[in-house]
Length: 264
Image (cartoon, rainbow, N blue to C red):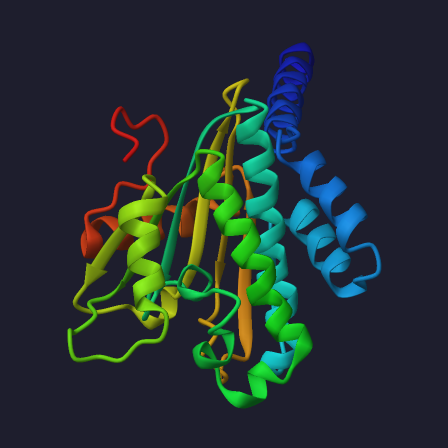
């Protein structure tokens, strides 16, 4: 009886340790993100702290005024896009898909060097840290698209009579510039899911998921951003991953899945 008990205990320990190793398996994106933060954001203590928490806990929440939390969350998004672009280029990734889910078409995709002051409110425009998030993302999102990333922009349908700054730039990006930028207008946006999500599959088959929800650049009221990073099948992330898959499919008919035969 004692021998059987010892055997069962040993088997349980082995299975438990194996599950821990599976969840802690290093993702092919992590070292690239480390390098980008070290080289471009080495003096940004808040971003370094946020990334450290995402790496170890898989989830992070930042709270405070928009002026305080937006630079952390959106710069983290820019780092992710830059890392994915680099790993697509060197074929460390098989593919990557992303969804931007916002009331209006994505701000960085409506921007150029001449119209930035028309895209945001005056106090935002005069805040160099928040404006830097837009200029960073103008670079990172276009780099992601140029290197082969697939991006769905789900947004509320734009009426012909609406005067949304930069729409001619956005339409040009969709129709002429990036063949993997897919415009997905819908009738209604669910406010609690405003943000962005990214998936990628590494060459070794490892799956990566990053997501953030908060607010678009015009939204000054957002006081909290939630961020997620890691294996989408892990216990900590799977519930939210499945939830947004359902939202994207139900509202915009976007399949946010791995191993899709039709990637876009």
